[in-house]
Amino acid sequence: MLGKGFWGVVTVAATLASVFIISAGPVAARSDVPTFANESQQADWRQFRGSADHRGWNSSESILSTSNVGSLQLRWSVRGGFNSSPAVANGVVYNGDADLGAYGPDCATGGSCDLLWHGGTGYPDWASPAVGGGYVYMQSDGGLYAFKVGCRADGETCSPVWMGTSAGNAYTSPTFANGWVYVATTGGQIQAYDTARCLQNGTTCAPDWVTSTNGLSYSSPAVTKGAVYAVTADGMLEAFPARCGTGGATCSPTWVADLHIADQVEASPAVANGVVYIVNKEGLAFAFGTNCSSGGGTCSPMWSQQLQGHTHSSPAATDTTVYFASGRRVYAFSVGCISSGQHCRPLWRSGRHPAGGNYASSPAVANGVLYIGTQGLNQSHGRLMAFDANCATDGRTCKAIWRSDFLGSMVNSSPAVAHGQVYVASNGGTFYAFSLPTP
Image (tube, rainbow, N blue to C red; front, top):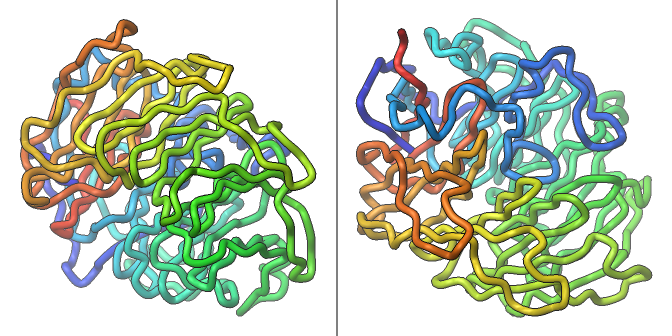
């Protein structure tokens, strides 16, 4: 996730392999749209894909746009980064790797970048931090960890306030919504934790409810409007009530949908305006209505479309457009393109990436710009790229409007866009921030 045209580089001790932190913001409202003390907090990017519904869309970003994104420069970089995607909350920047920690507060505004704290969690690999209710949540091969926001400011180690039981997973990101945390585990479960109860218990906390994923799921659950949407290891999308039980109850799905692959689906669902978007590993994209069935019934898609190539990437959705990356292309579709189970034609698609390689990064959309990381030729020449998110409606091929220099390795991390900066990590072990030049 590197970028070039170095404006300034801040180096943090190489021993820090990764970072993340907790926000002091209030617990999300019942609508799953967080309530914030000010407009600045509203523009934060607080967890994987930005919010609990995993839309990958920052609707409050107003600094970067299609008119100025071509001037992006590297603002700062620090050692520590791999596949994990960053979070930005209350002026602090978080990223995960072989450790966890928090940078800021000036990092988020382009100033000096100091390490506030870090805490050992084991290796999170693809997992990303989630910030909410005054705590930071991180999942790794060591389990689920909760840390207090602002636990230190001297760069030293913080201890977790509590840990989830049997929640180990090195691949999926926790989702924070309405005071609860939802995780997929290596033990083949979706687990749901009431964080207020866990805080009272301290040390370790058992989940309030669980459900089987029939094996290891690589997909992070999406949560919105009182429902959880999760992907099982055998290629099913399932919906559950967000508060379906307590005391370790076992929950059954409200509805299920077949994603037409008896294998891992590595993308996470995105939910927007009553539609769940998901793509399987073979590049088959789907749209399902959130109320498509009940009582455990099976749903048919509103529409589907076969994309080119394999994908690890999760979709992004605004109010009008949904974006998928598969193989070496990015695709944009109208959210209402078809409602009769037929196929859709894209509004636009990108050309095959000229540097070669595929997309494993998920797109992030903010103020009309789509950002995505590339793996690059031989997975060694990744970049951060930007497209006009609304470049066409007639199916034409669109070119990138900005791209960073090579970042030294592939970029699997998904960008976070907040407060006029774009954050991303690279497999070369560096975490980067891009912004406009200083006047």
